Picture 1: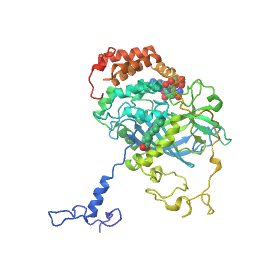
Picture 2: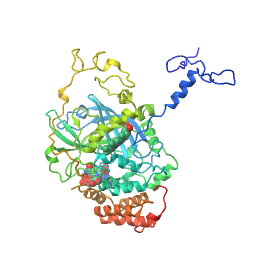
Picture 3: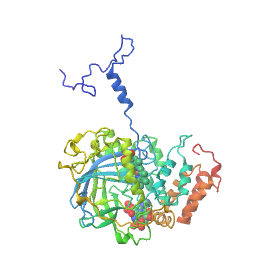
Picture 4: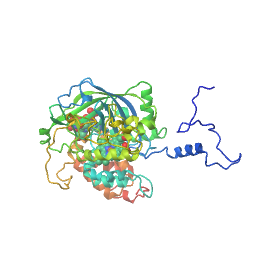
Length: 497
Ligand code: NDP
Ligand code: HEM
């Protein structure tokens, strides 16, 4: 007898023949009762799940967060106490491309982290940029629609992108980063990560601090030019997967220095900018980064689908000592991600092993699709209610975050009024050397191919308010690349209009 395991149906019955369909006579037809054939075809039809509506193409690995600094005066989070070591998962991604997109495309990169802490999962779902394109969540679906394919041509539309950006000056900061060298990292290891939003810390004394998270690559920054990226895509569309997976297989474990910037509640009243505005950074000179520890990735997933595709990251996952802030974008994300997971993965997505907390879980939700835990979550088979007299799980007041004073009249406030969208992009522009500025101009001009002149002129007017050299540089690059002279470019036909 062979020691190979017996192949079975999903119900466990042995499969007698996995080569030949059951037929009436050798020529057929096929018997409807061949449930082994039907099960096989039915499963194949269900192998694909919806891809993420954004950030569909991704690469991930497991690792550890080690705390070497001491920020215990700011936060009671167990995973951030001196000496703590927390197992974690990272998933990097591009934003706009679908699942089959090439890795080396100019785009913002997602930098999503899940820390399996003793108090539950803490997810920090950030990007490789410290800011974002918009500051009001009502604009997120509009912005993302400009990144999607044109309904008729099924091609990406530069016109839609620049139309939206030129009408949304709050995007200037992020657009400048995206079009700079950092907009095309060579692989996930050679880029920084940022929590981007303002989050909060709170300590044992019930004091709250505002905080920004930074993950600085210890491999150094490395980027491709558009031309280098395009040449590479001609050879492989999977360069990031090859680099991350291959590096970890070879024992080359990438690391990031973890830092935080901390602001007191009193300081937040005095900044010249809104510290909860996602299009702004906190200048380092005012809020110096504090070293916290090191994050290392050191283990590949064994099954990409099960562990990386099914990973569910959500800004709603915070743990005692870490919480949210008044950032409107962050608050919308607290709703949006878990909702996306219930649609993409199913009601009980946190039962999937990669999403399971590594601490006891006790709650009173019951039933629902793919519920594999029965009454175990409460410890009593019939206690799906609270309060109860069967000693069921009970709230823990020590997990209550300090109260936050909020005031103001309920209204829809114009988020563009009184906001300076130009100073911080200018500070960034002034950091660039001549080579970096030249590449910024060409990258923007290249991305504007086929865009009508009136949209280009609207965008150039914004660049001019950042710095006259910015506008002049992009205008010259447009002329060089497209023969653009105010409004001639709109005459060029484009399939993506
Ligand atoms: P600083 O000079 O103190 O900080 C500059 C920051 O910019 C550093 O974190 C550096 O990141 C990053 N940086 C340096 N060169 C580039 C580049 N070519 N492209 C993108 N980022 C770069 O100044 P401020 O804190 O006042 O910030 C000035 C501008 O720098 C901001 O307006 C913002 O655009 C950008 N920036 C600021 C960050 C912040 O949190 N304050 C974070 C990232 C960017 P690194 O150390 O990794 O090289
Ligand atoms: C993925 C919504 C802004 C980073 C997603 C997904 C949704 C979403 C629905 C897919 C989730 C899934 O299917 O698993 C939103 C909304 C936003 C917003 C509504 C604004 C209101 C941002 C910002 C950042 C960000 C500001 C970064 C700072 C990411 C990342 C992923 C993602 C990294 C991929 C996570 C993963 O690897 O699974 N977003 N997003 N998003 N988003 Fe956002």
